[in-house]
Image (cartoon, rainbow, N blue to C red; front, side):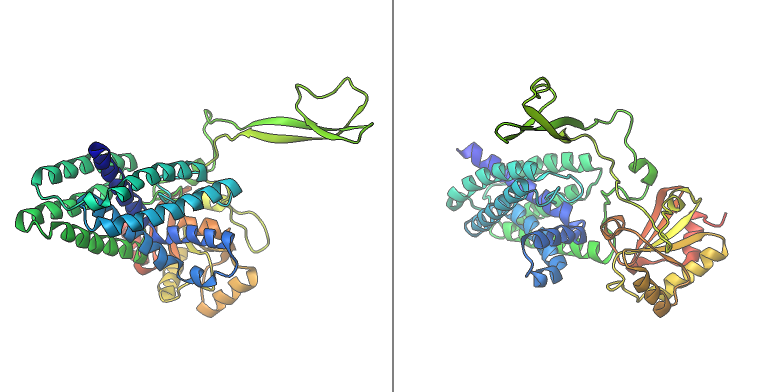
Length: 423
């Protein structure tokens, strides 16, 4: 039982830290997922929609703190209750999502590790079992009094988080774990009575600062198919060795004598029985195949023409992404307008992308004196492209070269010098 308890602490603690860090890297993206749940589960939750972003950040920070608390044994009587409440809630949520097909991806690990609702539900069942062990033994879990077990937890956590960080090609989960558990070890040498508290406080400070930074700027690590270095045409097509979907023809027949309507497959349909009359044939998906990472990106001009190719074929193009013009920040619009004028003076294409209607887009253009056209793209796609409203994207021959948050909009001269855009 003792070994199982240690395993439970290490598994739950590291998983909560990892899950929290991955989502804290993109609080805005996590808030979009929460809004998706709010929309599906209720129509009177407008107040939750308004606080989705700070609520999302708070959940990420809480996950990290709880994970650290489990590893260092801080106030496990209280922590175990919170863990149990959270896992019961999320297990029910993922089960409902899986059964009723509410969402396609649960968002447990953000865009880094997409899980289907069923995969997430099974993951939550495992977590529930391990958290129940922590809950049952909560009175026996205390901060370490000896350095040896603290060191063992430290090194095992480094191995686990190092493997996960390597898998994602992103070192921050490992760096945070080293910093927090390292502070715990250092404080252990100074004051054995306060080391667990110090680890929790450090995790609170670091996770809060990290989350805020990822809201005020872009995510530190972009896991989406529109990340810098990604080529959109490649992301929109499947490789030759991709797994193809499997379909089966379902034939519906009606019995002339009894009026019974029954479905058959091609293997057992009553082709030689005149008493059965064919009604229709439908193609049913039996097994899903691979899907392109980008399936719904398109650009439509003001005349309704699909001009997506302009983004993929132009030698260089700048996009101002504004998914909702009613919520678009205009505090940097003068800088963006100046950027657009200088880009166009150099013969470089500069366009805006929004989900707004033509009338709303034109009203926005006149109000803000924007010298560039605003074309139409799906709002969800725009939210995926960049976590900023507005956000600036630079592309060269269909490949994303640069992305800037509204708080970090550069001058044309700075971009021209760094990326040699005028050469």
